[in-house]
Image (tube, rainbow, N blue to C red; front, side, top):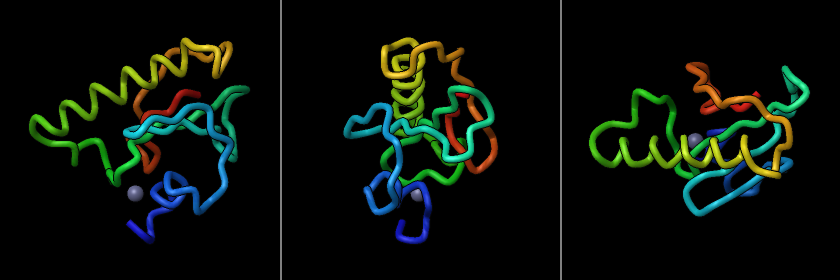
Length: 96
Ligand SMILES: [Zn+2]
């Protein structure tokens, strides 16, 4: 979606410090971190809110995102990161 900040980050149109990326998900450091390590995790396709991920496709995407967030939090990409949690704001799948 052209006017979506997060889609523009996923497309590389807006620079971000990428922690990890796959074809389906991206993790990047928050530009205004609220903790020493604050990484945002989101799908590479537009998703305005968690509640918009419906049906089997949405279930698969959310499951994949949680596994991706766990990999980021537990991996060497973000040493010392705590457990991931899902934000209900305009951010998706924070790992602060
Ligand atoms: Zn978007």
